[in-house]
Length: 243
Ligand code: C5P
Image (cartoon, rainbow, N blue to C red; front, side):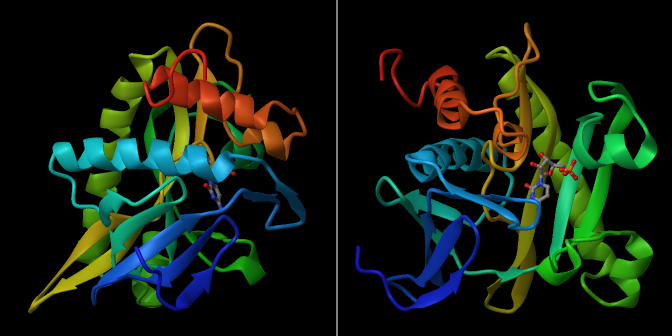
């Protein structure tokens, strides 16, 4: 499918104009960054794995009635998606303490949280994506109260669904980050799930060994990154045992 003009290039993906008005082509790069792009690498095959993993997750979420931007996968690295106006927030859902919450609240990594927690971060690279509250979101008009409610309830639904899906293949869903957009259709506008869901934006630990199967392997110089992503894809049935 012919790509149009490049619209945006992010750290791990590129967006191009799609073939029809209102469509976009999302291209998955092999680039990995961490610490707000202080650390960079190219990981052979990561984009291909994330494209496939994200396709499977978005397709299954659509199957439970969750509105998403995903239309179809075009090839190894590209998806056709619906155009949406990205809400400038990263929505994080946590089940177990790890990463920034462990550091911020002095919790030991791996501590089960009393309940699933939702946090919002303002998407602003120059500021390192700071944690914000609903007060900030309302005051600065990043999203309406209804949109905040929609994002919270959709994120909790995604968490319930994904936690079960991963548990069935021996993986613990520690936390994940999602992004949402406004999709305009005629006179209506609604919040839809955008971006991607892949081991780049989730923490996934092997249920038996607690081995990390996600981007923390890159953040913490542990190596074996694409091997871990391939193992997630293998358990999800995306790639065959011997691939
Ligand atoms: O670093 P932190 O503990 O806040 O990350 C929470 C979750 O959000 C992790 O799964 C991480 O991979 C994801 N995340 C992300 N993009 C960011 C920040 C966090 O995908 N910019």
